[in-house]
Length: 102
Length: 410
Picture (cartoon, rainbow over the protein chains, first blue to last red):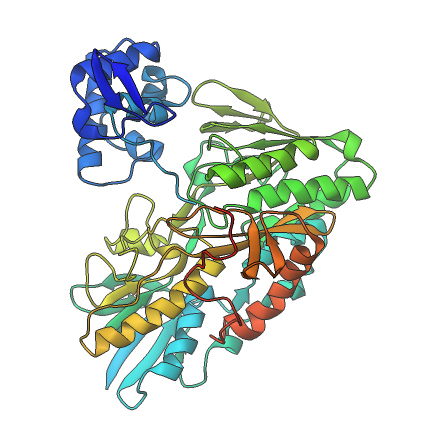
């Protein structure tokens, strides 16, 4: 489906994750953060940049991995993106929701 | 003479020893398998031990019983893999050289990864059932427990047999009903996932069952610590869940050998090509079962299907042919739901578990994603199949290594 984000028509799935990372830009990220009631600080952006770098390397993301990234520890990650931090942070970063292995 | 070495004589390693013993030219190849353990445990049995459904003797056999006589079993611990030099260093510095290596060292629990988990209440009111010791201690506890808050908990994914904690919750419901004390027990299922399972259709079916059995669910719970004094678990978001009896699945990790050898990821799983099962770092190293990082379930059924694929690819590799056999992520699991019923799921990398019939399209006799008594008997029969067919590499009739889509309601 299409959604108007930051005055741009963007392809998203039912849960609001971007279908194409190529449609993401900083304004789109900011608009998604506003919807999640998050005010993005420089620390938030450090985490988002890390997540996007890992995504580009096709390296699977997990809360544990972010905790060991050297960018934030898990407590800080929760403080920045409350409740379900990995889901919220990946949505803002414009990448697919991380699939948990089963 | 060339040498093929298998690390680990669990489910996956034992199956590979049996397959390759038949398929390799034994005039050219020596096969050895290294494992320090003396016993082979039927790990699915750990689920039934706490409820007195299985006895210890049902699930433990001598490890030697399943290794073919012309495969050398080396009973020693492994210090290091030196993959650049194609050699294994054993505990006392003894060296085993290889031309081809198969890593089948599995996964195990790591309670030390969570603050307080291995603390004062460990095996007193906090239990795991992923080890023999844990399952046995829990059995003794359940025989005497008088009720309260039972919390069934998953620390983080991935874990071995991802449906086992759900099965534990279902079997606990059934167990306490039979003991006429279900009204004295609150059961809560606590998971780091957003729902009962990872895939939408089975999550809906399983959450319906949880509701029917009056089992509460707490999702998106990322545990920060076990508080042994207050008997609570606390998540990073500050959520607190009290317990009288905590049955947890701790973090699962690959063998510490991978860390010592510089061959693992952050959870000590070996980066592996998910189709060919070749290690991503060394072309003469292959990986199977729970030891890999492939995005399939960590389960015996997966290792079983992988073993057939890996055997073909090893033969291709030896002949210097392309690794043509491709694993599709096929998994096939019975889920015990209590009261002598079970449901069955069949899925792979691409297709989520759905309803339908198995193994014959439109016929069954087994029903997918639906509770039935026949599925329960299927699960119990599986222990015999495991000891007598699966480990020995005898094909299971009508169940192929690639998932079939016919007979399924996508």
